[in-house]
Image (cartoon, rainbow, N blue to C red; front, side):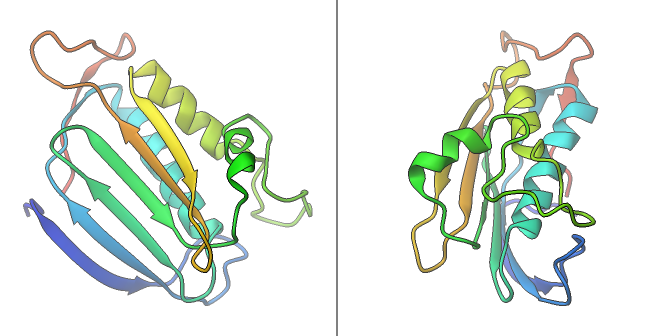
Length: 165
């Protein structure tokens, strides 16, 4: 099923450990997006962004997922208010917004650093911004280079990754 130009909102129950039974609303604005690169790595990039958006959200919060034909992937979530100066360190390995509590499903602080590494390996530009109060949370934009003739391929196992609908 094609989701070109699709924008929808639907409630989902977060599956991340520690999220409890809180419900989140997912807003999707999906346009076809083709990226040249490693399918497995690009899948990890998207999964890590979505897992973070769920894990670091708040009860009754929102996740916005958007793609555009010009190579932009955006994942935004509500959640705790993050100081803008703290955002760059969230992209570093083993860095977290808050001190570890050593609870099940907490994560090690690698998700966004992995996203940043995969983006770099594919020639993409990553920009992360803190969302202002009262919604809080984070918006991450990944701008991929143009796919097609003359486009710079990603890792050695490069192959086109069509938008999944």
